[in-house]
Amino acid sequence: MGSAKVFCVGTADTKLEELRFLSQSVRSSLNIFSNKSSSKVEVVIVDVSAGKKETEGLDDFKFVTRKEILLCYSESVSENPIVLPDDRGKAVGIMSKALEHFMNKAQADGVIAGAIGLGGTGGTSLLSPAFRSLPIGVPKLIVSTIASGRTEPYIGTSDLILFPSLVDICGINSVSRVVLSNAAAALAGMVIGRFERLQESSNEGQKCTVGLTMYGVTTPCVNAVKEKLEKEGYETLIFHATGVGGRAMESLVREGYIQGVLDITTTEVADYVVGGIMACDSSRFDAIIEKKIPFVLSVGALDIVTFGSQDTIPSQFQQRKIHVHNAQVSLMRSTVDENKKIAAFIADKLNKSSSKIHVCLPEKGVSALDASGMPFYDAEATGTLINELKRLIQINEDRQVKVYPHHINDPEFADALVDSFLKISSKDPTHSSLHQVASGQSSQEIQKDQYQRKSN
Image (cartoon, rainbow, N blue to C red; front, top):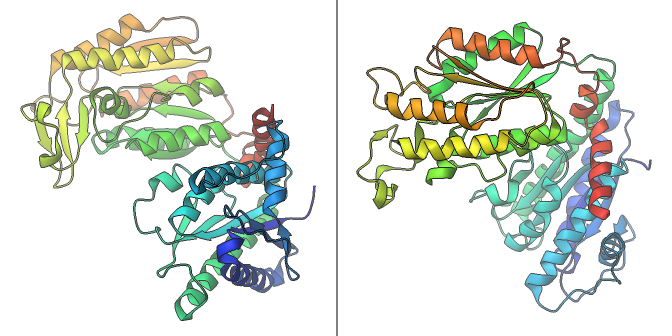
């Protein structure tokens, strides 16, 4: 394993002055912050230029050339040396994939301590896939001209930080000097802080971590489950079921940070099936099933399809039962036919599993709005959802379905969820390898496996 490195990444053909200043600032901050730390980190500039100009090296920093990035990538895909096309869009796409490969290999080799980059719209688009592919906890930051805009396509479900550049990244001036210096200090602080946490916690036992999904209308249930699990010795992570929330949870499942799931609030499926704005995608539940971790599923908020303000609701739904949650969010009640489709989606996923799964169904309502006297109470629609799940899910020793005579927010139902989870999970809520994953140590092994699979 080589020495720990911080990669400063950008297009040297157009941003060399800024890259050099950023790298100098990172190195200076690392030296200041590491006075009390034994950790020594090398700053390396990585060139991802997509234009014609080649930069061969720098005297004051270790420098990874574009040729080296492309050669590493071409060797992995068993191709002849890659030559960038004249089309800039295609060239940027190739460099982005090559950088992702380079970063994943560095992570698998255990040498990456953090990554910082800079760019405008094109540069941010080029860098972000590689940065967000790094495991959670590995410091990653991009100084970007679009940091205050629509950032989800760049960040995804990662902990990537987009740092506002305020001015265009075009030379060092009184504003960019402050911004780049602060960004460098932030990245350096995260890198040194992470090293110190690893040293302090290297011998500490860690709790098993359980993912929970929640919406406002299932909050009483999820809070009760959280409290009970924590009394049993588990750590809980709660995800807001907004589409992004479910993807974030499953991303952490894939990386090994979550060892069990109580997917209490599966409302994202309703949005996916019907066309709401907080939808999952077709891969929902896949990561949980593939990792074969203990899995308890319920039907929280499947009575709800979420839209924006009332004037944004599609015309075909304007005459449906609508509840205005606030000025920005409108909720629509799912119908009997839609619930059949929702149940079919869930059952199809679960029937492919070979791990322990318990499905817990509350027959008296699936959200705070789906209760007697409330706007979305519809015994027929909820009954259809539950009956279809009972009919479609193929029961076996590991895959169980049970209906409870409770509302989802009843304390008795929270008890049933926790009891189901405890039956199919380890008796010991501590997880010997969790510290390594959370610290990023065993994530090197995870990344190594992923890198090798991508290379084969």
